[in-house]
Length: 400
Image (cartoon, rainbow, N blue to C red; front, side, top):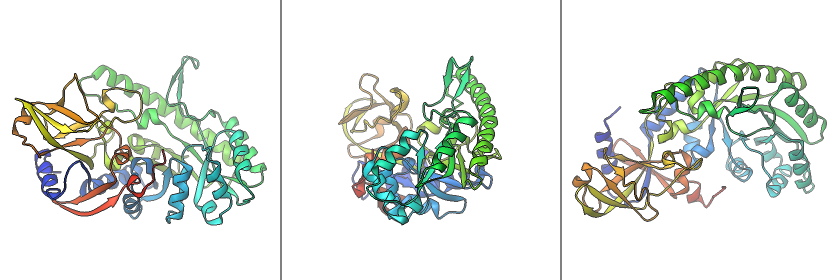
């Protein structure tokens, strides 16, 4: 690994012929992060979460590597687009109400074979059937298990509010309903433990909270491993030829892969390594995706102003959802202004070494959301841009 100063020099040299704002992906870091995900998965295939990449060229790059298999998509329109683009195994990770998309899926044998949709409620089956418009292709279905940890007799919940299905009986009954219904087939089961995979457990300067998170996550992993195994047994009793059981996320790859009931791991953010994944004891990686904003003002000593940069990430609003000034190290936001829509003042002694036209490199808080701000990514190897590829946005695709 190179030093931050050396990385900054490399990125500046590689993109000297380009005007900022711009976004890049360091392919050496990207590939190293991919290798680490495969290592942690311990022989189980890694399904790439497309929402964390949002660039077809990079999805293709990682899927060409040993240890990766399939895409986990986030909307039905995206799933259909990817399948039509040649991706042969696309798991839609969220239920959809896209009637036009379901009509397209049900009317095309190739699409129906490539795309698996998410279901956790019989009403979703009704919506799909009403959307078919005469198409009779069999729809591949994945069921989702709620992974939240319930404490104090259910009075406290830790985890995302996703599927309403928690217990083996509920999942098995929905599997029976799907199997009894013409035009549907259960092929998979998914359980995403976001409160483990997506929550850092080593928060800088907060040792007590970090220990509390580790204790919570330990209890959550233990409870979920036992419940997930029971659910898989119950669903396999209804669907003996179940194709896959998907679990995990970047922050919990090795723990989830250790569960015998899980057959594949989902991960995506670990490829770009955004700032929200800095605070984990279970792994470390290399920041691979960055964006640069140009210095356009020098308001005074210890201050520069860059163009734009106010790209907050989704989730509960807070400072941790903002990008962070990364290179040169030592810059910080003005607390009165933060990251601005059109301009962003940055404070700190490194500001005095920056000239008009120099660039400041930032890291986004979340992975693929950076690509909603840029039409293209410049792929850097060493100190050269070796390719420039479109993001989803650059291909005219804004799925959410």
